[in-house]
Length: 366
Ligand code: SF4
Ligand code: SF4
Ligand code: SF4
Image (cartoon, rainbow, N blue to C red; front, side, top):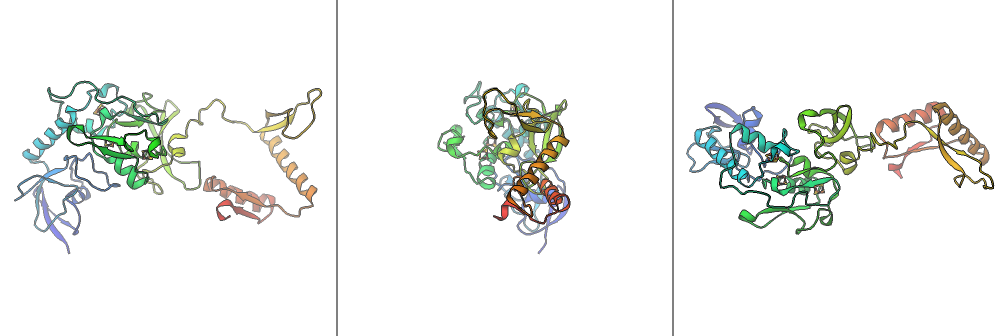
């Protein structure tokens, strides 16, 4: 059954069960949101998506209101715009006015809407900070609940996507706040530092410690790439400033993982520019010192840099030596799920075409 409705005077068709917001976004009609995210269950708590429905006594939250036959909706009537501006002012009343030093500035959804609706913090708003800044010892996630707008996206992202239920809501009314566990640290509340809550937070309440204060959104170039830590093949964006990787951000259209990443993919990027990163092949050489007993792997064996030809010849020679020693007629290759698909493909080529064996397998089958 098709539902016929009108939005801003124009006729549209919709499927039963679709919300006003879904129909509007399907047709590129603007309805602002803060708590809503297409990956998460709608909660209707931020009140930014309020619209006017003809015949209704109150404004309706578009993200949780299903459409019905003959519905007549106004998304930007003067009443709606006034209500949204007032909602924003309420949020800003309890919000520090420090966009100038906030890491989220430039990609903050609250900042964008405050600008669009020309909303300012009212004179009677709270002054100063209500909560400790950088309040959690998590090594990757910076928590500043002064910037929280209680949208609950972090609660849903952690509960519905990561299924860790670290974040929850404590107290009610003006005292309402987001807490980890029952007021513990994130780690004590079973956080695994995946950073999903940071990725979904629309403000600077949750941000990344490793890249905090390093770059503004407009100063970084986003380079979409594939994670090299395992064979799942998650995609993300490397944040690059002046040729240096300074962070990782979710790439919302990533086909395998969407916004989700694990701790390695999201925060394991500091090896890229690490001074101790291996850039040349190394072999262990026995550097004879007087009185030292020669024992493989024991004292006297040092890692030294070499060229690829030497390293590969050495590895091939050792393989041949070992096969001869045990009288082996063939050789087997075992690869790993911790390698990328591309690396596993190359091992398959190496085994079959270079070494000449079909004895190749993968640890995931064990
Ligand atoms: S969270 Fe957004 S609105 Fe708040 S200070 Fe940071 S940039 Fe400004
Ligand atoms: S980092 Fe991941 S596990 Fe930890 S609170 Fe955020 S979403 Fe939950
Ligand atoms: S911490 Fe961020 S995501 Fe969580 S409720 Fe506050 S503003 Fe929303």
